[in-house]
Length: 432
Ligand code: NAD
Ligand code: UGA
Image 1: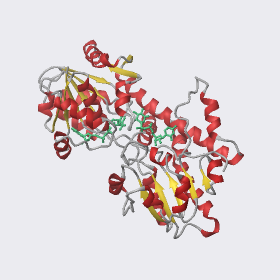
Image 2 (image 1 turned 30 degrees about the horizontal axis):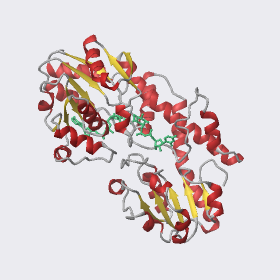
Image 3 (image 1 turned 180 degrees about the vertical axis):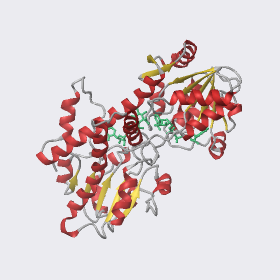
Image 4 (image 1 turned 30 degrees about the vertical axis):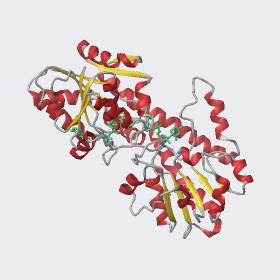
């Protein structure tokens, strides 16, 4: 099949690469010419394990192309996939400006029948907006719209695509369904066929539910701290119940990233617009906001009367999760400036996200290695569960630090072991 993917971000690029690997002819289009030029030279703008190798393979084998000219991308394509960003507006609503711009450009270049499918996360009703914009611009309706929301996670995006657990096909015509069924055939996944509006809602419901699991376990963790129970065992005990499931019950510093924070907000706004006030999701957001700030209090508590001012704190982890350099809504973006405002000397280390972090955190002090970051530190604050941090030699590290204090937002270590080594160790929902 010949496919045109619009937007070469996390979703567009990964999808384009994976579809080409399944034998399709894929052209990825982006308005960002710098990005397109980089991609043409084999430079991948994001850190995503396995992506570069797979991209180069498919370019070499002639199935994957990049352009900034939508006309070129659409030429001969049976399927157009919209994968542009839908960030939050200041009021929390999904900003559809990139979607609308993409719809207009599609309309301007639509000469023959195509299926136009939206992979971006969009509020219910957006498919109909796209349909109207395309037909108004094209001056005809020789196309079908569809919705096929994306469920990949950053850091494991390739695997999540090749082994997708399901595909939602929101369709309005048999013709569009046939094209989307053909696209998904090689992935041998469960298919849910529905209308466009239901597909759009499914994506928000899934993300909000996952965010709810995280905030729920974080509340339980906070209660464990107040009562002496251990959240890890609580989560294990809960998770064996298949109705609950083990996944997404890892208590920590709260969720970040480009999707949960914006999608929960957008869902609340969608409710407001539709005249239904959501109650659970705003609580999920509130818990998540507070959860981050608890770590500043944990740090303050560790220093007691001395206070935070003048202390050197090594922040380990800038990206919102491991195996990505995505800094969108990462806890570090919130916490590093707050600590600096309190007079803390913050030195950060991240295996891959430092350069991107410098774009969003002013005057970021970054160390080139983990050892450099912790040298003479009064405390370590762990924000991301990178493998490198899980494997660090805490016994040796203690010799480098000024004081043996670790505040761990990801429960990477055994509190008893660290206690025996002489650390003051505070984690999440586990007895110190
Ligand atoms: P992104 O910001 O990484 O990339 C979007 C790309 O679209 C950019 O390269 C931008 O230049 C390009 N673009 C914008 N307008 C364009 C236009 N008119 N024509 C061509 N290109 C254009 O975004 P992302 O993280 O890939 O997310 C895309 C969508 O997918 C969002 O709706 C998001 O919620 C959803 N989603 C993201 C993930 C994820 O893990 N990042 C997972 C599932 C769903
Ligand atoms: C999430 C969803 O998992 C994807 O299915 C979805 O496609 C995507 O959002 C999206 O719509 O963009 P992603 O944000 O890449 O994917 O990463 P996750 O693995 O879901 O982690 C999100 C955040 O939750 C991270 O900050 C992570 O540290 C945190 N988290 C996750 C926890 O605190 N505890 C957990 O148990 C799991």
